Image (cartoon, rainbow, N blue to C red):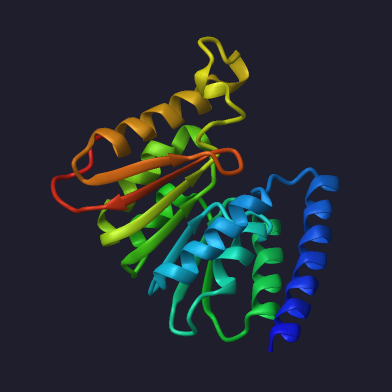
Length: 212
């Protein structure tokens, strides 16, 4: 059993190495492997019943999210780029045929209010300036005790700069507003972890309506 487990891990590492290289060569944004392993561990420990991913890209993060899901877990992935979404659907369906998945093309802000499920695990890795809007939109779609993880919270440490540059200003403002809502509101308990490009991990406690 131990030898088999090491063999499986070795094959996974080879797959991820090539996947990561393909992302770089195609200039497709992807989470770090450290972030991926954190997501994989979180899913393994929490055992959520329904997972929502906002911004699944070409499936690098999706792979880690789905790898340890229970067969009964429902996964929903949303992305604005149809080509990448189709690639992700084919990848995940091929590797994890027993997992119930739904991939939706479109703007998450338009789609989230129409989602039929209540989620207990949400991963956000999309347009940074829209982060606070995602948090507001999911308020009717998450269960009490839900875990919400947002990526790129440190934004290559640019969140600490007084003048991050005009190109990054909207993204930095969005991240800071997200952290203000998740950190100051009594609905959430939030911590920042220096993993990858920074992760904000929030526990939804319920209560009053999320501020804007």
